[in-house]
Image (cartoon, rainbow, N blue to C red; front, side, top):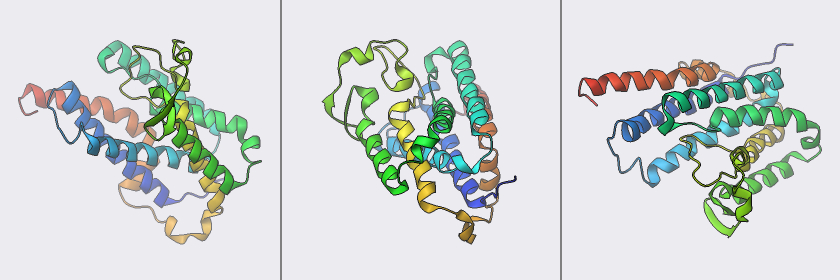
Length: 248
């Protein structure tokens, strides 16, 4: 059965992707080609990066039930994330990606598919508040503790961070580095916040303003995975050439 598509959701995903492309372009300029930007490397840049990620992850969770074959699609997205990790490890080890945004979204889709019967047993509004609360409390887990957002209130046992392969769960060992890192703790719970958000809202067909597709951004949203995969090497090649010509 063909599921109804809501163009404004594609447009919002496209808007998040456009911001992500611009953010990654500036990242390359600052960290690969060596042109520091104080605002980008400070609080403003961090808040911008977080807003992009939050929007992308919440939307992915919100749209989970609106797509088809979530297990297969989740496995495909996770495989793309693994491919990015492998390619960056070989080609650009100083900028290696370990469990980046695609690995998170792909694994979250598969986990949600497998745990959906349990998730549906929780009332939507309650589930939304619980998941968002757990997300806020565990957001600092990769930094060594729990608290409120990025502020650690209580440190976690050091033994949790001694396992070399603990980083997908949110327990990176000493010396771990990833230029794009989104572990299951805390980000799975933000994904589930979006999932419960869709259940709280219910049937979207009653919102006629969600149906029109914004030009350009709507197209970007529909093709977000492929554009995400392509934009990074394209941006790097363009910046490399501009750098060779002394423009960047």
